[in-house]
Structures are given as C-alpha cells and as structure tokens.
Amino acid sequence: MANTFMTNVPKDFDMRYLGQRLQEIYQAKGFNVSMVTGETNLRIQFEKNCGGVNMLLGLGRGITANCILQNGSLIVNYSDGDWTGKVIGLAIGWVLCLIPFITAIVGCVQQSSLPKEVNNDILSIVNGL
Image 1 (cartoon, rainbow, N blue to C red):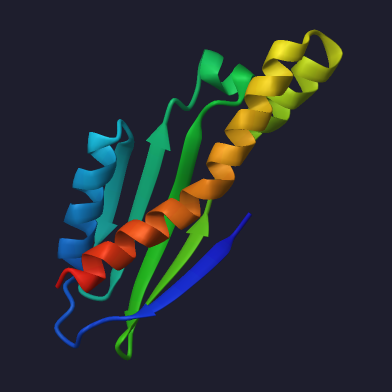
Image 2 (image 1 turned 60 degrees about the vertical axis):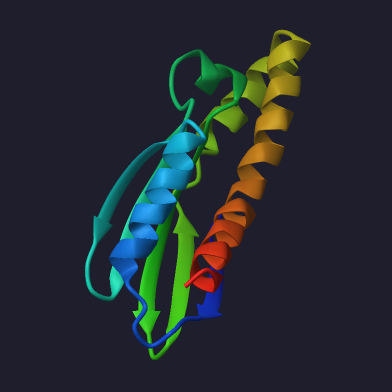
C-alpha cells in the first residue's frame, strides 16, 4: 500500500535535520528507526512491535518513508507497510478463534493511520523552521 505526500519547503531546507527530528520523535514513541540520508534524499524506516507474537496478532506497525527534495518541494513516498501480520492475524482469527481477528483489525486501523501520522510530524517540523 503506497502513499505519496508533497509539501513546499524553504530553500535552505536540511534533509538531515528532518531525519534527525523524525528519528527522535518516533524513538520516543517506542519505534525502532533506521535512516539513510543525503543532501536531497532521505530513507527512514519505522518499526514497532514487528515480529513474534505481535505478528500473529497483527499488532505490529511499520513503514518506510522515502523523502526527496526537488525544486523547493519535499516529496515523501511511503512503502513497505507491515501488512503481513494483519493478514496472518485475520486468517488465524477467522479459522481458529476470534481474538487474533479482532487484534488484526485494530492493527489494520493503526497501520493505515501511520502515513498520516508521519505526514503530520513532517509538517510540524517543516513549519517549525
């Protein structure tokens, strides 16, 4: 499930600063964050509760944001969402018992809101400059 976001940024916008701020924000929220940054691009991966029992319950949250700075615009493309656990939780819950089914639905709602949450944080960082 890919999603794209675009906003205007100042001429002297620093991608490294954006990456550092996002890393601080999401580590404070309990996410594991990995980042690769350059002058005009940034790839940042957010993961929380991925793997193990959370995968079976569909409660993990994860996404990769690919940011590109181009002609005064910041373009963010989201990819690699953590949807596998949700599918497994829905299937197990449907066949065996209702609990994984319910937790997988909760996980789907949380996962689908993650790009919007990151967008809001990016906007607050850009507007704070």
